[in-house]
Image (cartoon, rainbow, N blue to C red):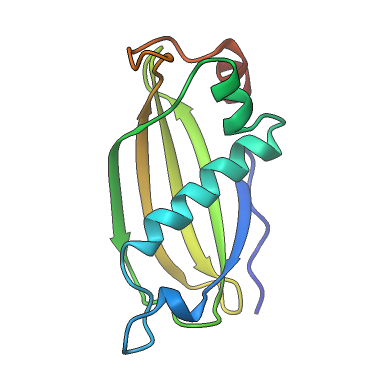
Length: 138
């Protein structure tokens, strides 16, 4: 069974579980899911035609101010994981990314969660999301 393609507004990244990401029981260590969330959101921007690096060069960063993950089923060494990410504006300064992580081989939902980000300028002060990001959120 293969996983259905991502839906409208969803961008997909793929990762394969490395041995170093697992514990003694062969299960992925819980903090690695947040690393995969980051893969999902950076690929979301890249697939939309802009990168975090481009945004930082433009003087804006998006630090995480909240993170949440619900673990459904364990991921294990060598599983291929589809990271489906969506983004939505919360305020002129804040942005939310939602994630669903599924095992590609059987489509099983492994985890889902979200991160919330605040746009900050080069001095670390809150600023409006760049026009380009707001346009990507449509």
